[in-house]
Amino acid sequence: MTDSNATGVMVVGAEGRMGLEIRAALASEPSLRFAGALERPGHDAVGQTLADGITLHDDPKRALEGCSVAIDFSVPASTLANLRAAADAGVSYVAGTTGFDEEGMAEIARFAEEIPVLHAPNFSVSVNVLGHLVREAARLLGDGYDAELFELHHGQKRDAPSGTALFLGEAVAEGQGLAAGKKRSLRDHVVLERAGETGARPRDAIGIQTLRGGDNPGEHTIYFIGQGERIELSHRSATRGHFAVGAVRAAAWVVGREPGLYRIEQVLGLD
Image 1 (cartoon, rainbow, N blue to C red):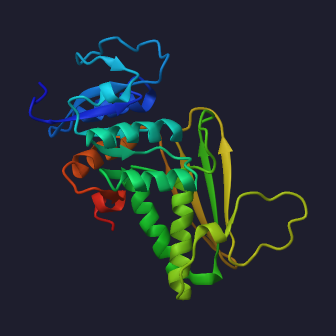
Image 2: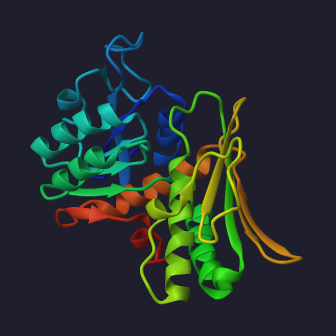
């Protein structure tokens, strides 16, 4: 039985693949309860009562009623609109949406001045541990090893490279910067395409290659390639359940925090 004193959670895309996973994960978190459901306008189930006795809304303001935190894995435009409604209502926000441009990221930061916001490209505990290991490997190996990343996702994913690939690439850049004694950013070193006469590989390049197809939840491999040897660090997802579990864990953590932009590393003790 759901504890009526548990913190209410609004789930964005409550009838979608990730929404259903989040609802299942909420059932195992005693401090939280599923209390609000949001779907895109025009969704067939809008207006219906879900199994938990909750009406599915297409208006974030209505879906947020009775909720103290929201969990959102949608698309950038929807997430920003939902964040506006959450900020107006004083509701904390957990977002796993990827594909934001610089302006979108700046808008998230502005909302975080009003409410606590936790935005992460990946909520898997093991992926975030992988990021920690990648940063350390890049630091310890230094410039003697070339760094390349490969990522594969399902054919319906809209953004490329994945937010996780960019997160891991940034970890490589940070680690290499630490080894060189200066700050290094992925933006200045990333290579997203190789075709035709490209010339020799720049020494400090960080390559990211993208594949799409089927229903794959996500695979990421980081290669540190040296002379006569290489190290590979990989993560492969078989289901989406662990992403939902991590997001629910983040939601329980962020409730009651001061306004600010928080990171998943803080939740997991990797900060």
